[in-house]
Length: 466
Ligand code: PMP
Image (cartoon, rainbow, N blue to C red):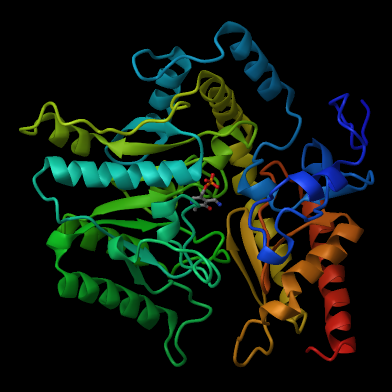
């Protein structure tokens, strides 16, 4: 099999990076280089590895964007997409249906906690969150509570790039240059134990978060609040693992106040934390809705969805508005290729990969934790097969090194040289490899990271920045 920029696709010219610089708008660009940016070309992938345009093989440290869970070039996944396309490539979900979508919904409902029984399929994570929020609005309209629509979200959150989902985002740069609807969203504190207020132990910090949650609901009025949306582990906010018991307490308060609990598992579902869904199996939660995407197809096809509780659907069916329409759907809702692929992905996950992910996760966390002896590293934290190396200006203040130091990007550049792709996040690096990663590959990953961080420390010292 040939590699090089032409790759498997004969007819693609060799100078793809130059063409991109002239014609491709890449996601998350800065104004100064929008539509004019060169990024590392990735040509090819196999297992946990990807190969860049220069033929350099790299460990896919972030699993693409937390999504290539079963790894690259898995033949059964490629085959099932081909076979489904040769049988039925598309059907309109508006007044027809297909069998893979029905069967996938059954399988997902079986793996989901509590009363979650039905699935609405979307094209990815943002459209899944957007769907859950619009469903909440519809649900409260039908139930005669048109004012119960505010959405509780938190600092450090990332829920997507469509307008309402993006309005929930709470990471440092999300809203600097971007609009959003603040009228519909209430922001609470991030449950970040590392940067908790000085003098509080983690239990006291959890109590403070729960108190804030209760107080804000009391101040606003539960009759104005429709939903809480939260990632079980805040992923793109820097792998924030909340204090023990905090999520369960938030869930209870939501129940007491008839506020829907929407668990955003776009990252954490499909094996990242060792289970199909983490909400129930890791955190003991029974959300009213769970959003998912990414790992559902291991990134081979854009698919996401919302799992919805039987209780909510039953309430709608019993409403006095049998004709009220949830006027919401996407051309690619229940796409047969995506759903057939996801069924095969789920087979492989349940038969082979979940057990492996659970087995290898403690090793992954323990080995990464050894990087804490490097003075630039404030903390290495994580859960399952997601982790974050958080770099600090100094360990006492825990202040992140600022953007202009581009620490994450510097570490990424060094690691790329050494054979590892890392995901830079301002002062942090996120690691979330394909779930099939072996102990030996974890050793290699950690050794490269150590060297990449060490070289970054030397650069910063030499440039007088640290
Ligand atoms: N929710 C979470 C928790 C995410 O991490 C992401 C994407 N990183 C999204 C939603 C949005 O998903 P997508 O990029 O597929 O639209």
